[in-house]
Length: 186
Image (cartoon, rainbow, N blue to C red; front, side, top):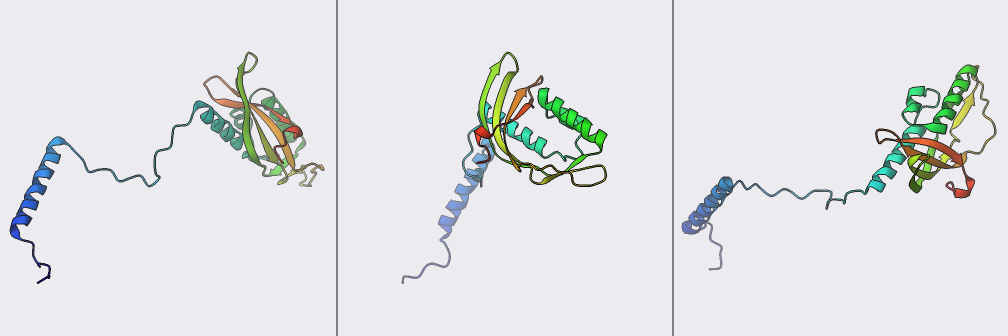
């Protein structure tokens, strides 16, 4: 008496299939599409501000600079990342090392990159200043004969780094200053 019927009554089935056909036909004629599945990433993230995009570009620029293979870097690579005093200094070091046969091997790393100032002035135009802790402990100086000639030095360097916007809108690093007072390595 309380058993479920094994088959639906025909009248209900016919009404359901007719309604379904009508719904599908109206969708096709009106151009409606199936709803999109929800994104697995959740709600959309808000767009980044120009300052956030610039800070990210600066950190990316510094990352690319630090990631250059020290014993293989070229003048063109440096020109694509540096300008001003930073470029002049690195080109002088590169020429001096090549002339003496000295090489720097190994990898530098950094941490704690943070943009601490930004502005626009007549001398350098639009700029940003950041601080970071550069770890040079994984690098060694090797002379032309392959002998390790690494001077005694600190492995962690607290740096301030300045980037300026150059023609074309890109950023280039213009200055590096060791500044233990910013305590980027603390």
